[in-house]
Length: 179
Image (cartoon, rainbow, N blue to C red; front, side):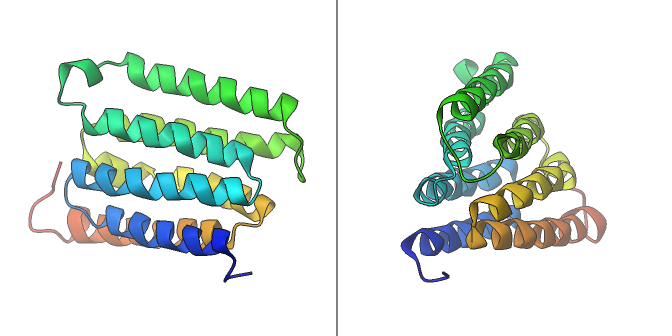
C-alpha cells in the first residue's frame, strides 16, 4: 500500500507541503504549495478521488494567481469568488456524473477545505495563513480516509504539526512577528 505509485507521489507531495509551512513569507509558502498541490492532483486521480483531484488542480491555478497578487491582473477580490464558484460547479458535476466508492456527500469535505484555503491564502499575511489553515487540513483528512490516501492523511496530520510549529516559531517565540 505504501509503495504504490500513487502513494509514492503523495509522499513526495507531503514533503513539499511540509517545507512550505516553514517559509517565512507568504510567497514562499505559495510557491512550494503550487508544486505540492500539482502532485496531489495526480495522486488523488490515481486513487479515483476525482473530486479531490479536480479541486487540487483548480487549487494549483489559484496558487499561481495568488502568487502574482502583486500584479494588477491578479489583485482582485473576484479571483477568490471565481475560484469558489468554480470549486462548487466542479464538485457538483462530479457528484452528479462521476460514480464513486464512497457516499457522494463526502465530496463536501474537499470542497470545504478548498473554500477555507481560498479565503485564507488570499490575505497577504503569513500569520493569518498559519493561524487558520488547520481547518482545511481537518476536512481533507476525512476525505483522504474515504479515498484510501495514506499519503494524504499523513500529509494533513504532518501539516497540522508543521503549521503549529511555525506558529510557535514565527508568531509566539519569534523575535518579531512577521506579517
